[in-house]
Image (cartoon, rainbow, N blue to C red):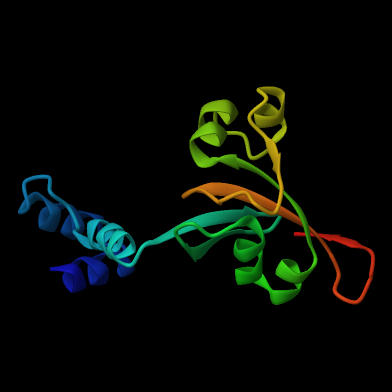
Length: 141
């Protein structure tokens, strides 16, 4: 089923996709559920980073601290960790109403600064501040 659905989506066959999904009586693909169950069983979670050009999702183990989460991006981020600026995905959606900016999240008081002991939560949107290894200038990601 999943392969057939992927082929129809790749071919942009909207009618074929609808017909295939109609045979399931609204149940849809099981892949999202499979991924969620896999993450839960493996005790994994994810967080996001966002910039002008892209949004990325990073996988970390449950209970990872802010420096450990930063280290998933690059080991220099973990070694030179200064602080984390973050908000939850739910707060971002509730505050933004479709905008692509943190301004309304900050205005609502939902944007936080966290230190080295902060345990990153599933779905956090993170901005790491770190000192470049070797004593360089402050860098942002």
